Length: 156
Image (cartoon, rainbow, N blue to C red; front, top):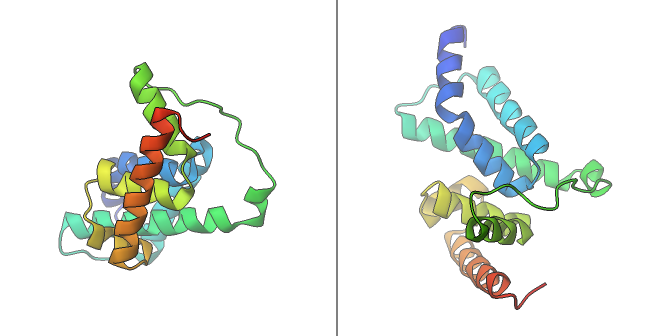
């Protein structure tokens, strides 16, 4: 890619979407920022040509989610602890929901975020995460059950 204006347009169009997805998977704001930067660097290196904006968005989300999964497997991550105990939200219900989502395992958080916040169908999520569609549906179902129990206070 040689046109800096094109890169700026892509960043402006997708940075918030990618950041929200990375934050949902990683649960750490600083790591999410790094993952988004890595995704844009990959975009710059590969210079892919997409027929439409939806495929461009899906490709960037897939690169971001895969980068987050790599970060979660990193030995360095296992030696660190998150600094934030709570995450800012507008009201008490939203804060409880965000904390419940953050309490889910990373794979469950990713599926919940991609389905509910980004609006992808299970087949699209399966393609992005490299899982079978049935696996995505069952993970989504289990994640919903866990969220329900967390919000009712049945799980700790």
